[in-house]
Image (cartoon, rainbow, N blue to C red; front, side, top):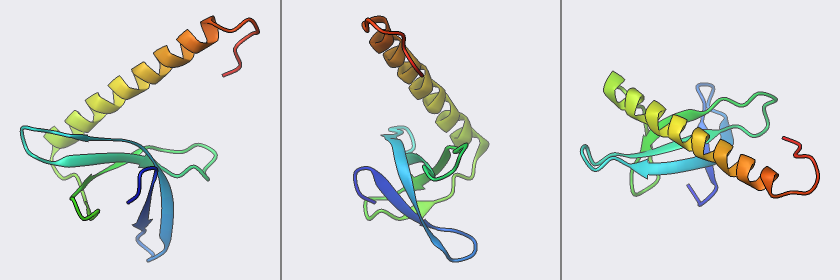
Length: 97
């Protein structure tokens, strides 16, 4: 895993390169999470996993962890929307999003 991409082996054994949206650590359970997507897809879906210091990926298995990831993701999306709005409001031309 480098700064912006991650390579994941799919269920067929193919290596697929994904773009990382963000990473975060939960101090309560000590897990580090990565949220990523396939930029080649027309309608990319965000995916998430636990990762370790060596870059190994592990599935998120508990509903509590999924809820945590979903909350952080929604916060990320809200912040991105706010950033786009602020940028567009400062432009003289119409914002194209």
